[in-house]
Image (cartoon, rainbow, N blue to C red; front, side):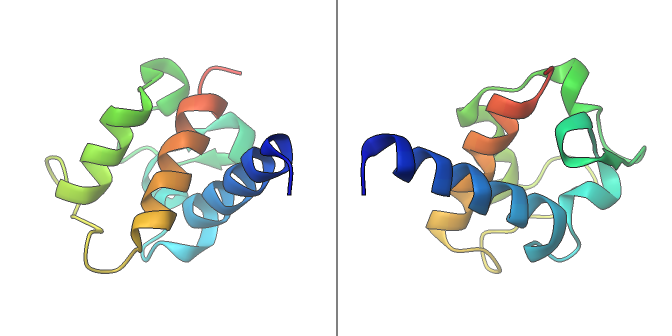
Length: 91
């Protein structure tokens, strides 16, 4: 697998985590245009444009009413969703 293919696979996994694998899915609470998500409980990620590190920290530790997903998502899933959100936000 080339580096580009690996990056594409990570982004595809990240989108799946965002829209369906995380329970509850990120898309339930957050808006992110690329994912077709229009949640209003959490911040609008297109406006926030968070970094990979910020997303990963929020997913691992939770923020405000957002729970931690550290026990329910693998390190690979957290890495993938962090990269996906950071790349997709604001597009």
